[in-house]
View 1 (spheres, helix red, strand yellow):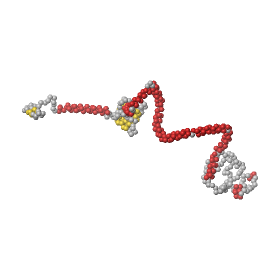
View 2 (cartoon, rainbow, N blue to C red):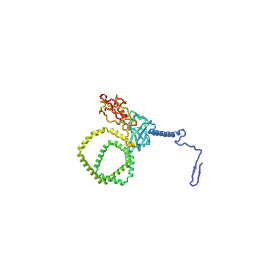
View 3 (cartoon, helix red, strand yellow):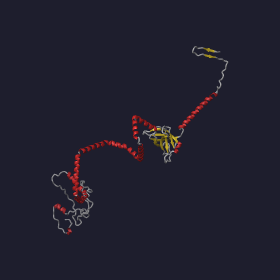
Length: 429
């Protein structure tokens, strides 16, 4: 039964026709049941397989499933284009990658490497390390350089290597050049380049000769570069020392200026002194030259005396030094000589011929050995026995001589002794 409705102007016109007797026919190519899900599942499986292939390829490219060991490289810097996952090569063969880069407190860079475990047996432990790049603007990589005499020991896990060289980046050069050009006035730069062009115009041969001579000079200077490097390293300490001594140096220079000014102000007096010195020298030359022979003879005559004084200077020193205490002693109450006397045991009188004087003593004065000139209280210097014919303590002398002239004269005054004959010479009185 056909149905129609009109909803007015601008409204939807709807017309429907229905028939209960007409069945619904299936559309061509449309299927119902379990077979209708096969194609979507197949498409989903294809997408998952492609995703797994891509993920596995990415992981293989990153080396996530590669067995590696950590090795550290210490370098003064890592470089501007050194990034994690950078390659580690040896003889052009990739043997690992850069895991990460660590900045140390001392300003150096610690580059942590992940070396393939299977490549360790080809890398000696004393391998050298350079941080370089394949092109001028290319990214950097770590280059392992085999040494001339490789060790038998191989590179091992956790080993620390010291980086040697880091290639300078053109990026850094351009950056520094740009910063420099920002500080330079273009007009002044143009004037400078123009003046430089005029200065070099027509002087190419001389400039080339100068460069050749500079190359020869640098060739001669190259062996001295280590010493020059040490001198430059020690230069700050030297400059600090000069800086500390600068006030004194300035004061010395100021005093030198004043001395120079004083000499200029007193130049007339200085001339007079020099003229007087010349006259004195002439007079002295005449005097000494006229008496040269007499002075020479006098000096020859003084040689024995000076030699004797030099030999006995120790005894003279002891004698003079022994008089010094008297200069510091308090004055005597009266003008007199104080004598301290005492009795000692007598010794045997002079015997002939054993007591004849002799001049056989050797060795010179020995007052220093005796403790002179200063003696401790209640002490006396020892007696030095020498071959002089006088030895009161020689073997056979009797120490106690009661019947002696010395004792008699001390008790009774001067007395005459008993008559003697030849047999009594040397006997007690």
